[in-house]
Length: 79
Image 1 (spheres, rainbow, N blue to C red):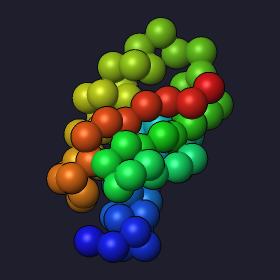
Image 2 (image 1 turned 30 degrees about the vertical axis):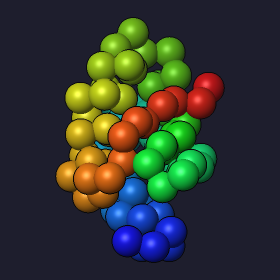
Image 3 (image 1 turned 180 degrees about the vertical axis):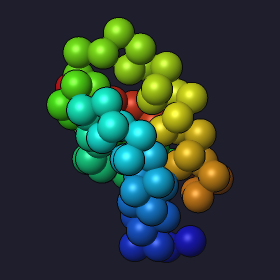
């Protein structure tokens, strides 16, 4: 998978999870993909102050991204 295909796959994953975040007043945006295996995202809106945003990041966002792009190893939130 080339860089552009990887970015499209990650964006597709974020599009899948975004409605769940939006329903609670939050959102997410892709910041960067490093070395083809590390994704940086920014949780926005209500997600920035949510007490369980790290659980959402790992159980929801990272799992969904890995479904679309299995080569991704880590997903981190950039505040």
